[in-house]
Image 1: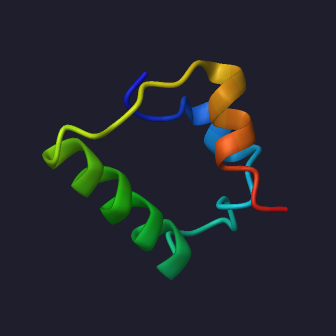
Image 2: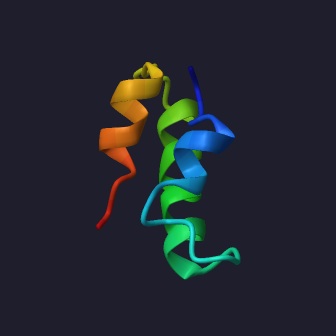
Length: 54
């Protein structure tokens, strides 16, 4: 998928209970990859590893 599922996000290190600067940086980076068409789609399991951060 283009973005992680809510479940993958909620269980990630990015989820601190509020949208923080790390979330924003990650979001903008992903969005720019999409704009350049250099984005890779990931499965649920791949997303869990990509956004672990803990």
